Image (cartoon, rainbow, N blue to C red; front, side):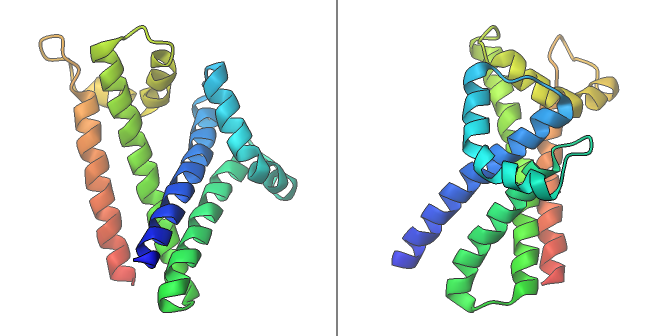
Length: 179
């Protein structure tokens, strides 16, 4: 029971920290300026790791320190969880960390898609709505060219959500063969 509680706490903390690091990376990739409250939250929660990593790996177009920081957080959480259960098999721990990071990237995109859908239904003019829309736009733009609106309804978010779910299953199957 204590192990499951420890695992839950480690996963919760790691998912929040890694999610913030991934959001920081994606905001820089799509060149979107976050609302002040979101920006302060993201930068204050991630600067403790991103700044030291930038000394080692200066940015060259993208904020690689944020992406590497997310991977390091995932890696440390896997070491904390699997290291207690099975001992240290570093190859397995690296593979599980990479799998988890790729899954969290997909889940993060799913979350922003759901947030955008909720904003469009409840309050399309909410202060965060343009920010979330800008985060999703690079992924939705190619689909919107392929899938025209039907009766004024944009189905591209639904298609992207299904594609992301397929991607998670492919990642699971791929890494299952590597173990």
